[in-house]
Image (cartoon, rainbow, N blue to C red; front, top):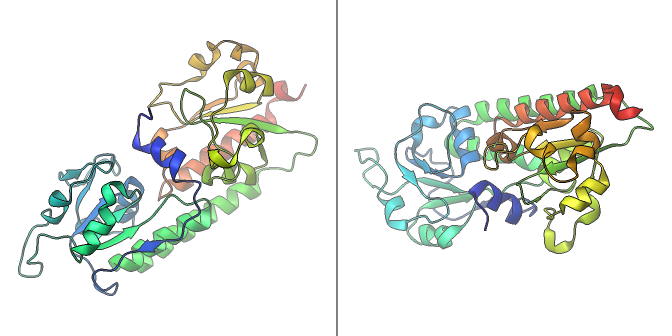
Length: 305
C-alpha cells in the first residue's frame, strides 16, 4: 500500500505524457477570484506567480509556501463535491460559493466530471514527463489567473537554470556515472523516461533502473536489493528522506549495501521528498541539487580508481 499522495502520483501518473486538460466551465478570459488547488505543485506555482490572493482552499498535502496558505483544506485523494462547491466567500463581485477555478493533478472520485456538470471550471495538470511540460503548466496557470508576465518570468528562469546546470557538467568520457534513484524504502525507482529521470540523463547519469523497466512499470519499476547491490551504482539519490526516513547511514546498514560504491565512497545524496516530487517553482532548486551531486561525484577520486 503506498503511503503518500506523492508516491501515488509518481507511480501511477508521472509517466503519462498527457496533454494539459481543461474542462468546460467559465470563460478562460475571466480572471478567477476564488481558486481551489488540489495539487501541491499548482499551489506552489499559484503563490509564486502572485495568484495566492485568489486561492481560497488547497489540498491537505499542500505545504509550500510555509506561510500564507488558506486554512480551508480538502483531501485530494478523497475530495468532497459538497465541500468544494461551498468553499468560497460570497460578495457582490462573487455571489456564489462555487469556485471559479479548480486545479487537480489526480481525478479522484471523478471530481472533474462532477464539478464540470455544475459549471465549475476544472483544469487537470497531470505530472509531466519532461521539463517542457512542467513549464507549459506554469504558463497555463498564469494565463488562467491573469498573471501571465509573472508566470512567463518564472518559467524562463527555471529553463535558464536547467540549461546552465546541464552546461556546467564537464564531459566525462570513460567515466560511467551510474545511479540508483530511490522513491521509497521498498526500492521503487524511476527511469530515464520520467521527469526527474530525464534531468539526470541530461546531466550524464546512467540510470540502473532503465534495464529493469517494463511496459507495466510505466517508468517506475520496483527493483530488488540484490539487483541494486549487483549493479553497484556510483551514486544513490534518496527521495524518501522524510516519508521513509532514509539516509546515508540507514542505507549503509542494509544487507550488502556497505559494499556499494555510492555507499563506501560517500555518494549517497538525500533529497527533500516534496521538492523531488513536484515540478513547480522549486524545480530550479532540485536541478541545482542534482547538478552539484553529479559534479561532486565526478571529482571524487575514490569512484574512479
